[in-house]
Length: 362
Ligand SMILES: NC(=O)C1=CN([C@@H]2O[C@H](COP(=O)(O)OP(=O)(O)OC[C@H]3O[C@@H](n4cnc5c(N)ncnc54)[C@H](OP(=O)(O)O)[C@@H]3O)[C@@H](O)[C@H]2O)C=CC1
Ligand SMILES: CC(=O)N[C@@H](CCC(=O)OP(=O)(O)O)C(=O)O
Image (cartoon, rainbow, N blue to C red; front, side, top):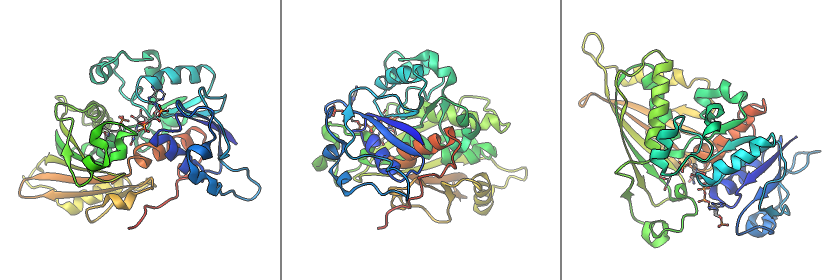
C-alpha cells in the first residue's frame, strides 16, 4: 500500500482527488491538509463521505471519513499538492526534502524556463532549482520520464485539452505553426474563487471571453507543442504563434477547445482529406486508454466525472484549415484524474488504476 497525502483537500481539485481515490485499490489517504478547516474531520467538511467508502474484500478503505485535517502534511510516500501557484512551490520543496514523491497540480513546475514563468505569473519563482528535475505530467507524451520522476508537474486544464488536440497534427507536420484556440470552460476551472464573475447570478445564462491580453496557459501550450514538433523531426523555424482565448460557460465542469490551423498543401497542391487526418489521429492515440478520436463533434457531458478526452478533427476544405474539437472534464483529465494517472506511473501501476468511471449522462 502506498500512503498518500492531499495538500489543500478543501480545494476543488483536492476534493475531486478524494472522490477518485475512494476507488483506488493501491493508494490509502493517510494525511489531508487545509487552512480554515484545520482540526475538522473530513466527513464534517464533506458530509457526503458519511455514506462510507466502499472496500474490496480484505482491504482497508482508501479513505477514512474521520481523518482529521491538519495544517502540515504527515509523512507519506506520495503527496498531491492542490495549492495555488507559489504556495504550491513552497510546499513541494519541503515534501521532496523528506523523500516524498510529489504530483503538483499548480503551474509552478510546468514551464521549464524561469523567466517565462515570472513574466506570466508575476512573482518570483518559489523553487527554481527544482525545475530541472520536474517532469511535465502529460502521460501521453512523457510516460517514460514520469515513471522515474520524483516531481511531476500536472498540466493545466485548458492546456491538456489543446495540446492533445494539436499534437498529432504537429507531429505529422500537416499544419502551419500559427494556431487559434477558442477554449470554453466550466466555472469550477476557476476554483472556489470568491470573485463576483463566478457567482451564480452573474455566471448563469452568460458567456464571456477572458484573458484576451494574454492568458498564462498560452506559454504552456506553446512550450509543449514546440517540443512535440521537434521530437517528431519537424522543429519550427520561427516561434509558434498562438491566439488562445478562453471563455467562461455556465456549467460546473468541462472544457471544450475548438482549434484552428492552416493546413499545409501536399506536393500536388491538394489538401489531406478528413478521413486521412482522422486515420492519422487514430494512429497517434491508438494505445491511449483515455484519448479517443471520434467521428462526430464531442460534448463536454461525455466527459463529466471521467478521465477521458474526446477529439474530433475535420478539414475545412473551403478555408483550407484543420479544425479540431477536443473536450474533457477540467477537474478530472484536466487536473485530479490526470494527477492519479501520473501517480500510477510513479508507482509502476497500470495507468488506468482507479480511473474507470465513465462520463455522466445526461
Ligand atoms: N480548478 C481547476 O479546474 C484546476 C485547478 N488547477 C490548479 O490546482 C490548484 C488548486 O486549484 P483549485 O482546486 O481550483 O483550488 P481552489 O481555488 O478550489 O482552492 C480554494 C482553497 O484553497 C485554500 N487556499 C487558498 N489560498 C491558499 C494558500 N495560500 N495556502 C493554503 N490554502 C490556500 C482555501 O482555503 P480556505 O478556504 O480554508 O482559506 C480554499 O479552500 C491550483 O494551483 C490551480 O491552478 C489545475 C487544473 C485545473
Ligand atoms: C475558469 C477559470 O478561471 N479557469 C482557470 C484555469 C484553471 C487551470 O487549469 O489552471 P491552472 O492550473 O493553470 O491555474 C483560468 O482560466 O485561469
